[in-house]
Amino acid sequence: MLGERSIDHVVLERGEIANSWRRERWESLRLLTPNFQCRLPGFRYDGDDPEGYMSSADVAALITRYAEASNAPVRTHTEVTSLSLDGDGYRLRTPAGELRARSVVIASGACNVPAVPPLREALPSSIECFTPFDYGNPSRLPEGGVLVVGASATGVQIADEIRRSGRRVILSVGEHVRMPRMYRGRDVLWWLERCGLWDERYDEIDDLERARNLPSPQLVGSPERATLDLNALSRAGVELVGRLAAIRDGEALFSGGLKNLFALADLKMNRLLDRFDEWASGQADLDVAPPERFEPTHAPASPRLRLDLASGEVRSIVWATGFRPDYRWLHVPVTDAKGRIRHDGGVVNDAPRLYAIGLPVLRRRKSTFIHGAEDDARDIVEHLVRSL
Image (tube, rainbow, N blue to C red; front, side, top):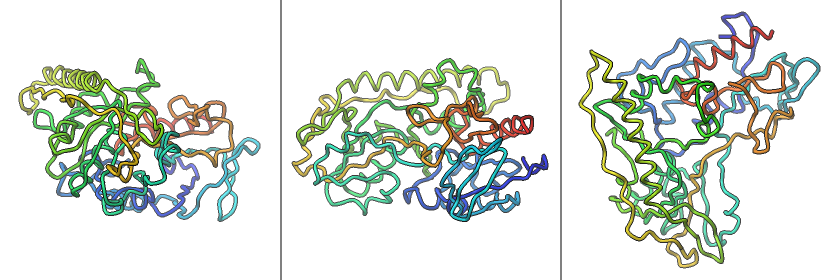
């Protein structure tokens, strides 16, 4: 888009093109979004499996093909180690030397490092810890049971994979977003796109802060297009416990109230399905199955509240507790107390011609998905052109 406006630019990549997809994903990961939603500006998925879900390697290949097709001026292995103000522009330091730019777009994403809670420091030394960045596959874990902390998309997928490897798995569940993989014969993300929910703008959302901090939905991109919710995990033998609240005297302490937590997630899912149905009722030629509803999430009769970490019941913990951006290299005063960039729809506050893209609900609900990049990028380029 910058090239279309004859604006000189360069793309700095710390590793290879699509580096995080090549180096920082567990082996079995597949996209949550179906292939037909893998769209970039002027570039669409053209394979023979539009209803399937790409692996990490497939995504890396797609982004590489896009970079080649768009003739993007990418400089690989050029990590930005410092970004600072310099007169009316910015100075960027890299191992290959310094650059100066009038405008900068920060496109490093929201998932640079795992967000592991501080209570990890209270763990006994006998418990080995892993994050989605170093988990890889179940064979990397020590023998024995595993506690997976976090039940959003990452947590449920990893818990299911470890369970299928033959290990005992305990899943610690906090706030989560429940969705069926398929609804009325269509992928649930097809519904989110078609009914217009994904295009809802950030300035139209009542509680923007909450929207930007919602967990990722409990979905998996399997060839079977199966729903992977807590009921499916429980039936398969995964033990469900509450949120990990503390580690004290060698014990993991879990919060109660699973039944209420599950009821709230079910309520929100059904409200979403109601919205789909309302939209579908106004589409005369829509080819979908009749409305449906799903069984409520079943809470264990007596979920445990304590786990003795010295008993040997679990030997490792996988922290599927989310991710956060890493701005240690950003030496411009534009972050808040939690280390998040202060911005208005990607236009960074108090810093002229500094932008961000790829953050949750940046300008639309779809901002962090591949197909959400185009509309956000177009808006940001328009603002950048006016500022220049």
